[in-house]
Image (cartoon, rainbow, N blue to C red; front, side, top):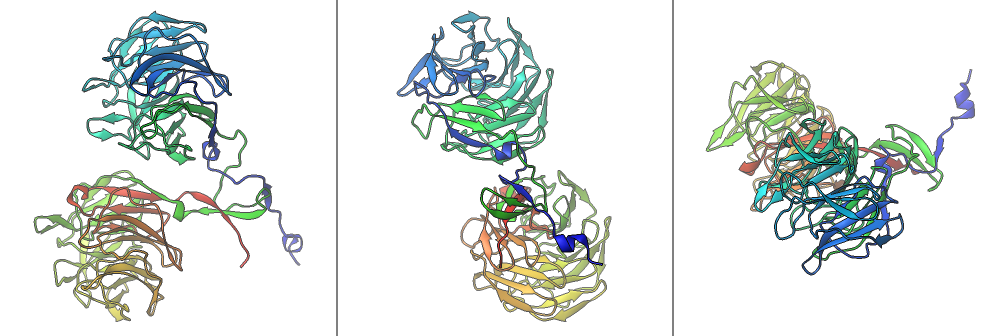
Length: 610
């Protein structure tokens, strides 16, 4: 008997907009009413709303400090009574009818605090520590001031305002100036970003009314950004990463930061107010010109949650959509730091959050036998290889508890093979052809080893006990990246002793086929994924510094996607998937211990008839 669904078909959900990961992910910026007086380094009534807030003080162009006070009604700014003390880099809190301005710079850092009652400013009790460039959050009767600086001194100081006076509390975990801040009151605050003598920060700290706790970092280091919201739901927009202003916006969901829609104009040192659902930034500077612009952030109150595998019809665009992991849209972020820095193809296998690395070159002519495992946040040293060596290959789809380390060593390389069982290494049958900078794929019982230096094309198949020679690569080379299984592998890039290559070859279980080249010829690269969905990342182009290039293979062609944050060559990566990969170690020496994690988010793909 025929099934009902075979006769009648099935219903596809109809939506007027695409699905999104969160309310903030559906948000966007739009132009709002401009300030009457362009200025930067503005204080604001941060707990005001998008339709009722206040911007005060700031720095004019050319070089003048101001005590201007303007209120916003959702459409336009109106000048109200000025503050008693002109200043810039001051901080603010409260709402349009009940605001607080504190600290700032005149000809030096000041501790002055002023309170707004809806018609005028009154001087009240000063901060305990004079400073400017502080983070801020809260109301006119419950405010937190944190960080800042005065002259060359950066501060971690935290002070709480109770409506009458300031009280010193527990310091931030690190000194910082121009951090972002979010919070409904002084008892629950988020501090993020900023700058200290070591550079721009990604650090995020959460305050519970008593002490600060470090939580997950921003994706992009910056200072002087606009920020608003509460400690469980905040928005950070713009800022500076050095000499340049930024447009990047990030959303905090109480656990993690996620990049969302950018500002229309790169900007920093703005005034700010509102919530993660509806906020604004006004004024600022871009790139050296003081501006009066306002941008308003609005996130939809009604949205459809994104879910992997979802099918729907978008009635606005008249298209069918499928929700899938969008590897081309993926980004790199900081991962755990290895205990032993290394380069030269330390082998890896497993998934991003359960991987293993072993061997490698540690400088001064020395190789290491060190082995470390990764749990998604930190690396742990475990039992060493029996033979220290660099330039290894690995069965890239092996697991954290079952993987093969293949050949390696200095020119002309070794034939040594070792098997890892989750606790120790055991030497097993050697490969037939000794080599170094070898590539590998498969598992600990069904593996493939191919290529290598110097200029090797040999391919060998592993059945768990012995190696068998099979069909060679079309072009012998080492220093390449690899991914895949014993019967479906990919070899990417490399060097054949005469030049760097962009060659890509696919293994079908019996022979290699040349397919579309990488966009950039390179060697010393890392790889992950499968023969139909892979990543190639990093570069040692030869004669030039290591690179950040990342390319995605879709089974037909290569596309350049988001780069690594840190340039590196002689690197490696996990083999299991392209949507959740890890790149570790590599050159130059300052980067030996750094790892980065690649994450592809869910995306809505239009379904087209073929």
